[in-house]
Image 1 (cartoon, rainbow, N blue to C red):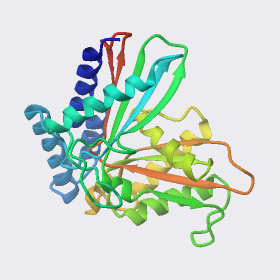
Image 2 (tube, rainbow, N blue to C red; image 1 turned 30 degrees about the vertical axis):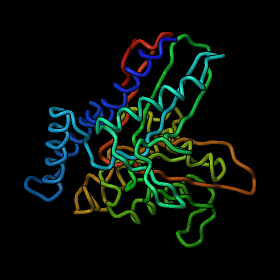
Image 3 (cartoon, rainbow, N blue to C red; image 1 turned 180 degrees about the horizontal axis):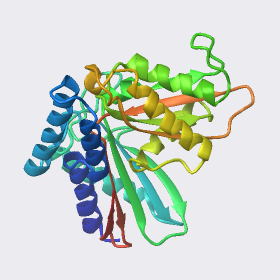
Image 4 (cartoon, rainbow, N blue to C red; image 1 turned 30 degrees about the horizontal axis):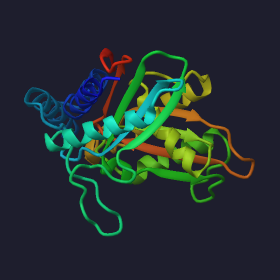
Length: 294
């Protein structure tokens, strides 16, 4: 395992994620712009967003000043040395922070002290899955604090919003979460939703939905129909970009389900802002880049 190769290409993954909006996300924003009224506030916001993304790409600077919490998802061969991979990834994060691609935004929750390298207990976040494969699949999501703050978890039945333990109840939960957010979290964004699971796995699985491409529908027909309906319903809310009104409240909705305990029925809704910083790369046994994802 060539440490220099791994650290170099992990650093490149972080740099690219921070500065270069993925093509599927940018295309979704352009489609949303075409559906807004000309010279409206919504059209102005979306135009500004696209200009900002272009400037960030050209100048090799972060798309947003909040570079967020770095969440790494690794698919590794069986028996792969994940401890070494964690160490090399932490080194790449520290270097990216020094170069300004990641801001110093990690704090000690007790003292309030800042971690200058963004390396701390719980930072960055790592998820691993061993598979029968030869390459290492690395996917990074940089999730800002604004979108994280408007996440919501419901326990059904919920009498306050009239939500029962069924897909119609799930729909009501999702719309309630979007309505409560009112554009906070930097709309238009993407929803990641998990039906079922427990308090912890619900949030984890809802965020894993952000690894799917824009426009990619659930393989479960009922959930695919629900995804489509949620997008249409949210257009009617007139929340729009940054909550200033308009049709583009969401760019996409990703919904999946986990098994649950008979006594529990959780619906977990995670938000991702328009600055949907999500990239991936396949690395070979020595850390060389095989293929970029997204």
